[in-house]
Amino acid sequence: MRAIFLILLSLASFQGITKDTYKRTLKLMGSRFEITLIAENQKEADYYTDLAVVEISRIELLISSWDENSLTSEINRKAGLEAVKVSDEYLNLIQRAIKISELTDGAFDISYASMDKIWFFDGSMKQMPEQKLINKSVEKVGYKKIQINEANKTIFLTEEGMKIGFGAIGKGYAADRVKAILTEKGIEAGIINASGDMSAWGKQLNGEPWKVAITNPMDKSKAFGLMPIREGAVVTSGNYEKYVEFNGIRYAHIINPKTGYPSEGILSVTIFAAKAELADALATAVFVMGIESGLDRINQLPAIECIIIDQNGNIHKSKNIEIEH
Image 1 (cartoon, rainbow, N blue to C red):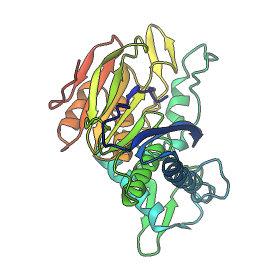
Image 2: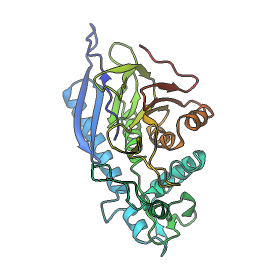
Image 3: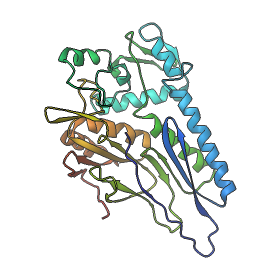
Image 4: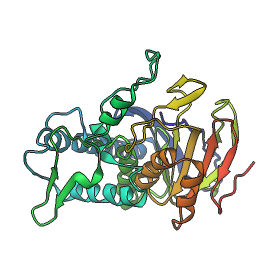
């Protein structure tokens, strides 16, 4: 579940400034989206917000796992049987996802959708799954089994029963696309919040950067501090509501695609990057990698920062990040 950020919007009105801040909240891609723009008037804001909604809806149909007519559904149906021709956009998205898998040693993997569902976080689980079931659950997972033919523009999953899914990257991609379209159209400032996947540009009316509060997962009514977003993205992935406990160990809903075991020890991960798509994927990967390995990998990446809150409420930060208290 994505953590919900408090967006601090300045609605100050200065003499000579005619623009104002406009926000619309709606449900898209099965999630809560907030689209905030600085525009001349309500009519202009509505027009460009409608453009954003059209683009998000287009992306949902492109990558959807529930729409049987989507490319994703066709690829999954034909796994182990034949390759599927795809658009340039879809091919490029798959290629970027695989690069992130390589970057994170498979901690992020869009073939996670192949996992058998043996963990349930709705209160129905009373005991740990058997080891043989855990091992079997990930047999068909593996990004290296996704074959790309650039010349023919095809995607092929090498094993029957394999599946891909974009749950850990799709909303970030949608936020990035909306930002790109609206900046091209001349909207000078805004912020897209896709259930915690946020992409921002420009500044608030008072000249300050957009800011988000880093939510305290131990008490969601409180925040650890503020972080500015300057022409980039911030994504928080939270693990503090969907979990089970066995033998004093909390197992949360983000599952390691290599082992079949849920992540442990982390409540939330916040990633700052240039693109929400990348931040989205890395937030999931850090959960799987754990605090030490996750921070070590983030510290090796240029222009990417990370805040981790562990199960005891302690904050762990990458080397170049500062929180405004």
